[in-house]
Length: 156
Image 1 (cartoon, helix red, strand yellow):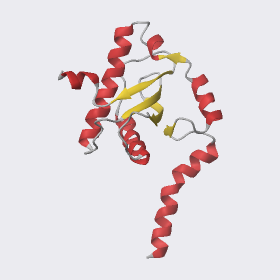
Image 2: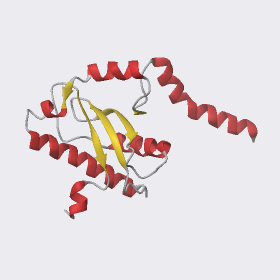
Image 3: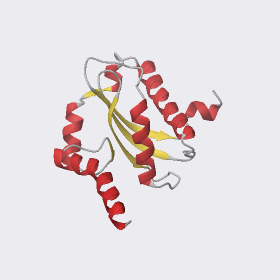
């Protein structure tokens, strides 16, 4: 019994060890950690969401809102209550709108939730979501997010 628990724990730790050895951040990571690697990531994804949207602020905002609503929907499908959660998010997209990496940090005005649970929720989300914006270059966006999303609060 003890041996199988140890084996399971080791198997679960392998992805984290591989990320640490490869010098890359986890796909979902806490902002404020691994600063040197984070700086490399931000320089690799130098184009902004607004630039990827050809300077169309409405398109960029609607793309961001689509993603935030999709996070809400995904959380509901996982029976995870995001109401009152406020995060800083830094999202890094591939050219096709697939999320390559996402950094997060609970804002001081957030409802208290377990950061490990948020990390697991976001990891599941990024595996199944694609932003409806594409670009010739990798791109990123950093902003605050509050749940439920604005459009849900208005009842849209």
